[in-house]
Length: 221
Image (cartoon, rainbow, N blue to C red; front, top):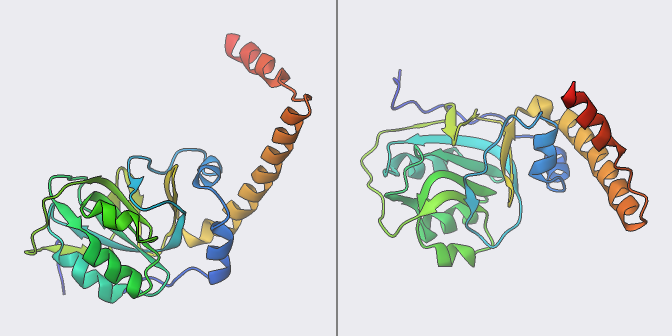
């Protein structure tokens, strides 16, 4: 039996490919709106050229500045997974760089989310492989351990459980249980249509702004 600090659990079942494909077309902001705007993070930024990241979370918790458990976690990842790394928000040591990102891409990982720092940013920017991180530094990691795999992690205040679905883009990162996916997709698609109707009304000069009066009257009471 492994104890806290060294636990390693099997990866959770992956989300259905059809669900992942639908989510690729939905911005994180609309998913956030339909989770009551209460869950998610915006302090990790894309370090790649851009483009969304969607997949099933394989989580890793490491000691600050140490990436030994990340190397082991590759063995727990399947094509389409997102490796989510809780580095405690530390940016004094990079947890990974070009070599590990290249390996992740080679084995089919959908992308990396690191609450910590990376390095080799210029090379990663040219890779066309999603990498989200808190910051960058030239100082590399140690490889002493300990670390944990597939346990709940804290990413900038957002608790992510193994097997949750990750959606990340230029606006930030959201995560939610697979059981919520169909509901969120339905609500987000409805919102996409509403926003398209609003944009059309603005272009045609018929945008109704009476809702402002109603909200002001409500707040005055």
